[in-house]
Image 1: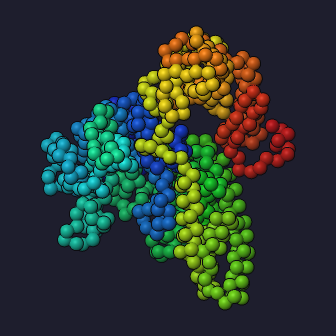
Image 2: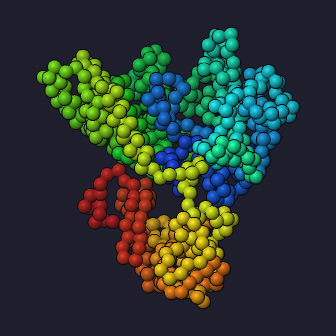
Image 3: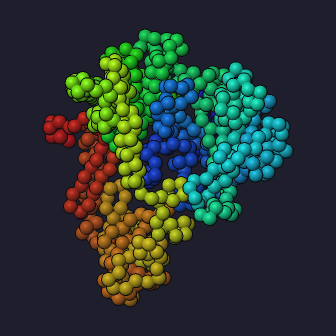
Length: 615
């Protein structure tokens, strides 16, 4: 076991699993693609959900990634402890119906003992209490002694999402960090709440289908999903107390201390602020590089909250003026070997963060004026507690953090109604939660098109022809597959070939006609649905159509050409915007139809009249 840098560990892991036939894939962006169930990527398997659910065919049946992740569930604890953080990287190797337990366990053991050379006598394994197979492989094949294998219950070692869907037991690898991290109790062991036994790698064996009645049946296609925190692994390999002591994170921590003119490890309150800034600057730098901008909703709100929290703690450390831009350089330097986009977008990231930091400084000035007025009114009324609704309004409407409100009130000998604040916050969260669409297994939206064989695809032939013949393979309503449709019915038609362009990249879908020997349909829209299928939204105008019939597909030529012209203009507009405003301009959405185009893009300021004229 030798000291190994975080960047070297990442490369070592990915190369190892490449040698096992896994396709190495660069980290996916922090913004989920085609997944409305997540604001941000929270785990290595999250971007691969379509492969696990069978909605899409993976590029290879075995893959390996090091995925950028952000989790904000414990944001209030970040800084207060040395173990909580929002940004982290997750190492993973995955099998989609390919290798299973035997290989996953053997390779995990080979990597930790032969590549990392972790001492075997300090490694412990947990398995699900009913998983005899995994225990046998660990003991007989890997050679782990029985007194280093622990059986645990469903809460610890069984993975399932919801009341139905794929699930299975998991097996975790622990590292004994030594008695100095322990609780001192004679029964201290794996699973204890203390910091001695650190779980660092989780192997999930997805082998069952759970049914709503609580029963389980074996899956035909068994999957492997593993996850190991890179920073956590680095803390073991570097023999340090926490992720904030790991080489690349410590470099940022040290830079924060230099700017603040203080020393880490001397005073708890200052350490809290140092850790908050260290963690949050990593998060917002990577978020900005993936095109997220601070805003008042969704992932933009997460970014704004993290960034403002960092600025607030900078003020607590006595840092005057703008300081985030200086820290960005250290984050980029420590991570550019794997994430070259950080260096490419460096100027843009600095502009985004600096603009928000400036805005927040102005916000604090405005918030102070409102809070001063509230305090004056409280003193006049003889009150000593600020009501929860006012605290929430200061936070939600004016961006004035609750911890800042609390601190200022304490200086005046007053308190704030944090319970009332929490109620207002919970009410807002519940409203946002109810606005989410209902989802099925792993957050995948369930539609009628999921009932079609996932291996069925539609071939698009419309790049060089606007007419063509194909068979009607499927007809659906919004809810079910049907065999035929008659005049007046509104349906979706799916075929193996089509000249109709499906809505994509902001360009609307084609319209036109589909004609069979017994009926005629008017196509009003064309959409890409699940796993490469095109659905023609159509109204049956004459006769009747049926599954299996040969049909002639004709695209409305005049509309298609008008849309194409506007699409070309959208590209010209983007090129002009990048030339005038900068290379950071990327399409954040657009609408291109036969009559107009709308181009959405990310920029950190409103455009001036002169800039618009230049564009």
